[in-house]
Image 1 (cartoon, rainbow, N blue to C red):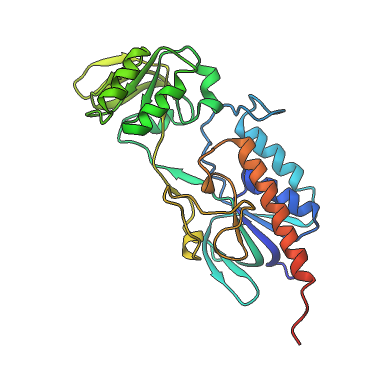
Image 2: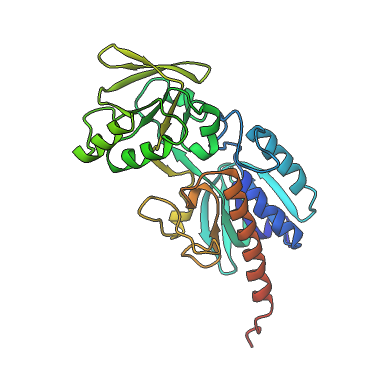
Length: 306
């Protein structure tokens, strides 16, 4: 193989991409991992619910993972952002922002997603620190604290029931008129969950740690943490440009083996699942790496055209 030709190109070098890289490296495949160095959890101070690494910083976990993957001689790294992908006769071609071109038989997108922040001052500074998305990742650390949920409608009702497991000092902020049913509102009230319909203006915080919510009418309320299910977009448009189908929720559609709807292209991690946890995306990356390796092996045993 030439310096720019590989068995597999992995786009995205965080937990899922690195996990796939390790599986493929151990399978003796020539792998290139392209990473722009912009993980979605860059602000998160600690990672949880990942056994052996509970409470470690995301940066430390990623650095240790990359160090271990780099020991496999067939795995290479390229720092940069992939901006274009094309189908070729023998596989795929990936072009980076600075014009480098790489080729591979298979692609794995471990590119994650990009969260869209609400129009509330301080939200971006608090995201991943005290404005959080998952109680299984962060709920224990803010258990029994004065906590909010930023949501509305059916999802707000279901999420309120879930978060009530971690704290009874819970308020649902609908940021405008509530769309919950009368029955849902009554159920929340019966369980001591307050409902506030006032529009939010800002989160007052100290280095991302929330202290209070300020409303557009000038009033405030104390708060320690705020759960939010934010809208998102795919971090990379290349899978869509190559024809990979998305789900109704906006995730890359994959089967049980991380295969997308386009032959030869796989996806793993946050870009194809709503379960955003380190442990889950690591498992997905390992599975993707193994299945890509198996596919390459099977193809090597196909009869050659006469």
